Image (cartoon, rainbow, N blue to C red; front, side):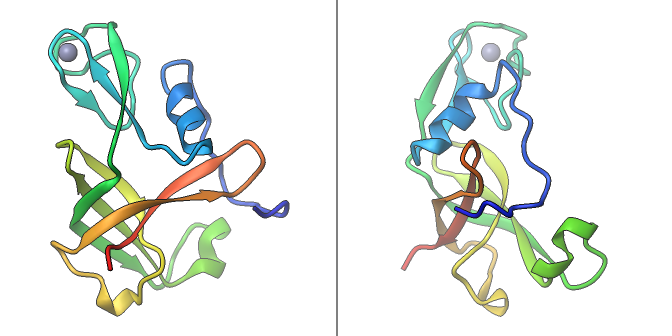
Length: 137
Ligand SMILES: [Zn+2]
């Protein structure tokens, strides 16, 4: 945990607060519709499939494969310039949703589509823990 974290932070909404409560406990929670079973990622105020507001939180195993990725070498937003180069990934979780995140603990030249990854949690401030992914060894 770093007290000098100066990058943009998520702004939890009432419909996504539980997700962020989960990450603080190193749990990846998914918002699942009670009517149709659809999972919205990121969590949304209602189900984007059937418009229901009835939902429950289910815990993800945090495992998936990289669907796609993009490495930024230049031109990052100011808060992320010191991180260059870094790689953003789309992960297809075992629960059937696609999630945007960042890969860590991996050489950027080793990132591959189809690579197995698992969630890791980074407590960047006292109130905020981010979800990232690392290769499954
Ligand atoms: Zn639904």
